[in-house]
Image (cartoon, rainbow, N blue to C red):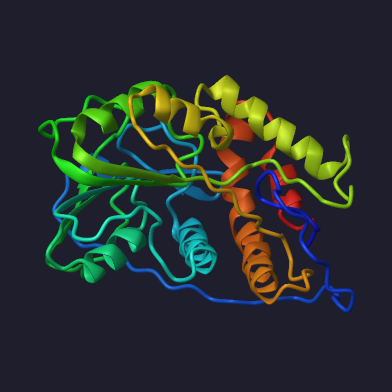
Amino acid sequence: MSTKANMANPTNQIPIDELYADEEDSASGTDSQRGRTLASTITQYRYENGRRYHAYREGHYWAPNDEKQNDQQSIAHHLFLLTYNDRLFLAPIEAPKRVLDVGTGTGIWAQDFADQFSDATVIGTDLSPIQPNFAPPNLRFEIDDCCSKWTYNANSFDFIHVRCMYGSVADWPAFYQECFEHLAPGGYIEQAETSVILKSDDGSIAPGDLWDQCAKLAVESSERFGQPLQVVDKMAKWITEAGFEEVTEKRYNWPVGPWSSDPKLKEIGKWNQYHWEVGIEGWSMALLTRVMGVSSQRIRLLGTT
């Protein structure tokens, strides 16, 4: 799958490599599973349309937690590192003591952060126990629902990290209020999200075409589900309204495919094309089959387009 598209509202047009030709790109990701003692109901996963989903708070989240979707998370992590020039975050923190990674997924960001800041205590929370068995000693994973009332003490953290939680939260203002109450004075929250609406500089994605229709269907399904996907356009406003000060928003272009003449954007585009190829079925399957009545066969065909 390759299309000249950006992952967010573009601020500058991406330069096009006139010699670019679509090629099959390949990459590989690795992941591992964490051995732990858990209530059996948490690991008795739900299987549906060939994909595996979380058991704790079953049905509250639409993305699979199987190996294929975990690979997608690894690719996304790499994309953010490319975007941030190998940095894990942009907030001006230097010596954090207690850090919370909300929706940690496979735990890949939390592991890297714990390695970088060995004096910090890092907690990663998620609905699924899919984190690795071996982790830095200053990192622990907890099975928790960030949409429930938080049980940590007030002012517990000096950094809260949130990434790719689109479609995961029904009441974002309430979520940000929890973050505000549990950050220590002077602490930071950082959230990174991607748009689910592809845009193009050259009009190659026109109103009514396949990807425009897919985006509208995805947004509608998430709104019917009660957990909107397109949080990227509203989160700065909600964070400000929660009481945070000096809120800064930065937007980046993620081309889909290695068609840019800019070397960094070409590399990002190559990985983002692979990101979409690996991720699109999982992003679409539960929402579109459960909410919109689309057949699983049609969704699998979309992944080959």
